[in-house]
Length: 72
Image (cartoon, one colour):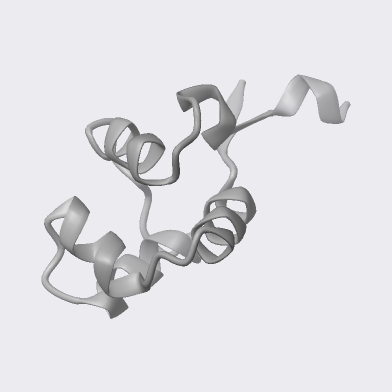
């Protein structure tokens, strides 16, 4: 089982200097506060968001996940 690594997404976004507003626009959200709710886990990212996130964060899709089996 895998889960989205929200800490990685937030950390990577900050590392490369992408604003909440830029991420929101990339994903088609109306404002930065909506995106922040996804990044904080209030809402779940949808499958169609993941390739956009990976491209924007300059990472592989697999980097966006936590493998829960490794945590056991």
